[in-house]
Length: 160
Image (cartoon, rainbow, N blue to C red; front, side, top):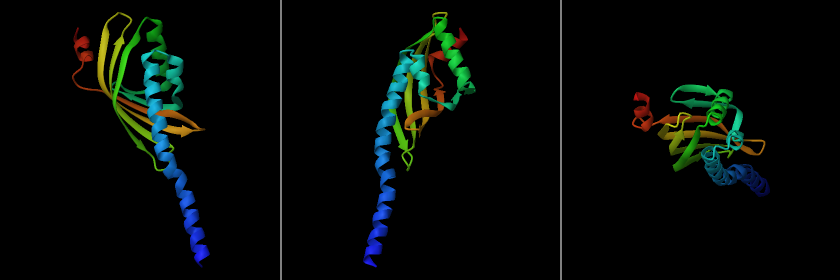
């Protein structure tokens, strides 16, 4: 009886251990991915930046929901026309790791300066939430919600 009980306890510990062990590692991996994702955005490295997205990612901006292909096309056009991200400062990263360690919600604040093709510059003070899924051993962005704070330079430029 004690052998059976010990075996059940050991099996229970083994089946629970991967999820427990995966969680801190998942958080560290996604923190590094968030930093690399935003650094690629700041460098206007569109190949690397869009490589972080899952093929079926959903994107929500102040303007509403946008599909990934439209977003990709718009950014490539902006850069081709002479626009670019000038800076992208990431602060206040908070992570929530799923119990299984295969999903992470990352929230953070951003200050983004974007030069438009007409040479005007927009500064967004924003909050971003990314949902990262681990699929086939890779962390990919499955969802983004980017919200601009109410008072920012974008509003001032829109009135010009």
